[in-house]
Structure formats: structure tokens, C-alpha cells
Image 1 (cartoon, rainbow, N blue to C red):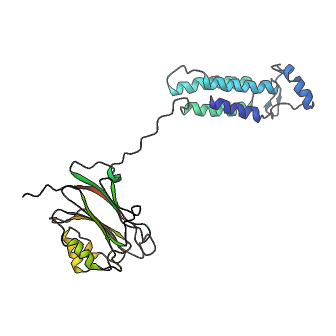
Image 2 (cartoon, rainbow, N blue to C red; image 1 turned 135 degrees about the vertical axis):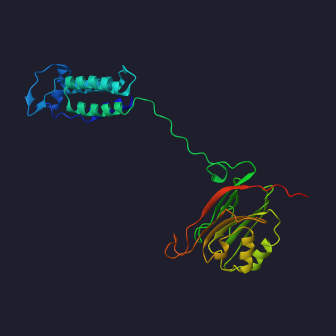
Image 3 (cartoon, rainbow, N blue to C red; image 1 turned 180 degrees about the vertical axis):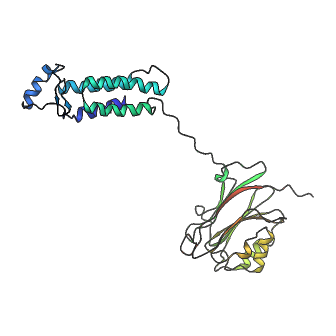
Length: 307
């Protein structure tokens, strides 16, 4: 119905009378005679390949509207889409020939396309968006696992993020990020947050980081996300402590490298949750900094220690 109303407005509002003999009568006289000329047949004459209309302008517009209305709203005789289109096209072409209008043929051409494309059918519902789970993961974590997502800082502008079990532990919105290393400690048995701290690795004191890592208890999970520079103040002891937590990239961590890491105190093997992006003038995404890193996954909780 909306299409019919639109097409009717187009036909009535912008008539094209290129195929109709122009009259020399004044507008007022033509208006007075329009009612008497309605549907009065005239002998069809062929002039320069164009047909003269058999109807007055008002009657011609009404005929076009009726033709379009019939072509669109007539009920289909078959459930097949091709049959629907064929039946409507046959009726439409016959009506067009009777109406004798080039514009009507053009408009019905649009109707044909709409019918063949299934415009008369009800629109299908939009596909549902992919479901997101804790911390934006694409799949849920198994039972007794912690969902996490780490995002390193972007240059020295956008701060890092640490999400655990759908709770944002560290972010610029929480106003608890800092240049250097952003670290969150979590109980590996219960998943409880223990502590959050940042360590300036450009102008800070490395002893603060050492005092924070040395006394960790067995099974403590360590979440690390870098921001700006994470390596300038690194020394051999601090690198060794991170290696004991399962890191393999910390020994090569250099000035302004991007780094995300999840380790644990007492881990037997190397951690599978670690990424490092080297600071390279030829490959840096930002001027002077590599691109930000993003890592997510599921970490199994440790069983309680015996005794």
C-alpha cells in the first residue's frame, strides 16, 4: 500500500504528456472541459513512433493508479514466486497496453522487479547478534575456570584493561592505571581479587616491584598489562621472578614493548597466556610505540592445597 501511494504521488505530481497532443486551449478552458473529456475514446494515431492517449489527463492518471493498484494487490494464484510474478506481469502488461502510457510501463517495470524479488513477502527477522560471554569472550568458560581479558595500553594515551569474570579490575574509567606495569593478584583457588598495583618502569623504583612479587603465595595468579614503557627499569632479578611465574618473553622485553601476561606462583610449565609486541620503528602502529595487544581465555582454578 505504501508503494502504491508513492507511485500515485509520483504520477499525479509529475505527469509526463510527451505522448499526448498538446492543446492550444487556455488553462481555464481546458479545466472546464476536463470533466466532459473523461474516458472519451479518440482514434489512435501514430506520430513519430508515439501513441496518443485515449483519455484526458485526469482520467489517464486515474487509470494508471488503478493499473498499479491491481498489479500490486491482486492475490496470487500460485504459491510459487515465479508464478506470482508471471500472473502479475501478464495483468500488468495488458493494463499498460490499454492505458497507453510510457510512464505507466516504466513504473510497472519497478513492480515486476519487486514481485520477482519477493517484496510481497513479510520481511525476515534480522539475524541475532553473536552472544558475548564474560569479559566479551565468544564462548563460555568451563566450570571451575576464570574468564579473563587483557588489553595493553596504546602508546602513552589509552590505558590498559584487565577484566576477570566480567568485572573490570583495571581501566582508565576506574582511574587506576599507570605508566609501566599494571598488575592484579588473584587467589588461584577461589578467584578472589587480592591486590592491584602499578609500577612506573621509566622513572620509578624497581625495588617496589620486587617487594610486591617476592612474597607471593603458592597458587597466586598474576595478571600483567603494560602501558607506555614496561622494561627500562627491569633488572635481572625482576626478570627472573617473572620467569618463575611462567613468562618466556620477559627476558627479551625492551623499551616500549607491548606486553600482556598471566602467570602463577608455583607453575610447573611455561604459561600459555603471554604476548609481546616488539617496539620497531619500521613496524610500529603508532609513532614511537607498537600496537596494543589483546588476549583473553579461561584459566582453571587450582584445587585447595592439602593440609
